[in-house]
Image (cartoon, rainbow, N blue to C red):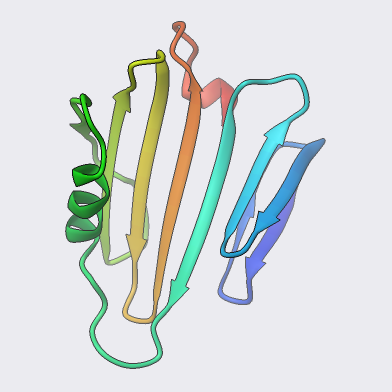
Length: 122
């Protein structure tokens, strides 16, 4: 199913997904599953965009006791950063920043870390 997040981008998500919008964060999940996708977007009308890696470093500075592993993001975004880590509760987190000159998207996927394959979840 294709969803238009903003006038600037759409995404394909699985059928029967529940959507919740809380300010600038939109969350998607399937009933009965412990995984979710969260998206937030920032439009820049003037000035320079903050680089993806700087955004990621600032976000990770607020986390304690995590050992993130960077990974390559396959995207058309000219600037991007991606990391994954498992928190103290055993949840696997995937953070991705996608940055263009006028748009920054932060995507989060989380799923219980019990050997599940993220490709099968989201």
